[in-house]
Image 1: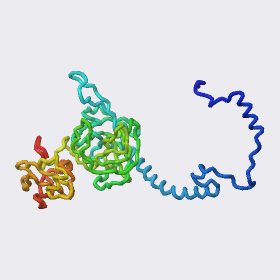
Image 2: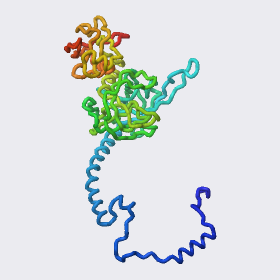
Image 3: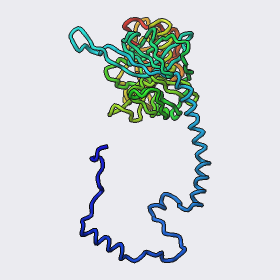
Image 4: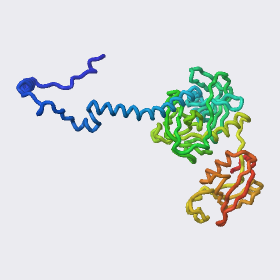
Length: 395
């Protein structure tokens, strides 16, 4: 090691050295004022707690008793990590650049993310985000398993509107995770986020569900228009995309997708696609390769605000106001009119136009839905049967 790594703290001038020696030799001894009394304890030390051996022993005993409660809770987290960890994968993909860097060509871009192995029907699949494997060929995607093995997908299918992607794989030894029910989640529920933040594969963080129904997020130049995210404070960073959000029973209840950050790193606001919504798209991709969405036949007022809601007879800003009705649509069949405000879609309150768009788009074709509507101050219910969306149609 170089001598430059070491430095003296300071030096005392020669004249001062004799003075210091004189003071040390000639100074009288400092005797305690009363022999046998307890030495005074500095206030700075006392503020941290008692210092006598008996008092500290009692604190240690009390700490052991109290810590056992937290240790039992920590054991739950450890068990979840051990159960889910083997099903989490690290993904690397060469995807086409978003725009050509040279005329007529585009250099590939290396994307990294995460995924979770599950079984959909009789197929083994890796669930992840579409932006992780966007337009990549199967032979350009590498999937690293928890046991160190490298596999590649046999097929990749994705949906830009929801950022859902499914990679089918063929590995009989693949460990799969259990799927939960995201509809039962409540704000405050404990969750764990798995993934590969900054390339640190198979990392685990812990937090809670901080919010639900987060929509209209600005996700840059992506085409993710159908949003209904879970919000969590479990640390999510670049590389966590596609990894699972898991409950305390070890069940996947979301797929980590995005963060809100000024720095590009975790600031305590992460977003995940609820697993029920994710699987609604994923199963269609696996079964048919495409996603067929339902159609109601209305266009909505994006400027419907609190003042407009009050004018419509509502006490608060909620619902979605109809602007136009598509002829020969489910909406026209039940007599909806321009100016109607749709308040409920089945048993769910319609929060705004984005919420209604999401619910229609994630409903089964042919489903009968009860709509609660307010018109000229009068509330009434109608039952509409959703049909398949025609090409280039709206809601």
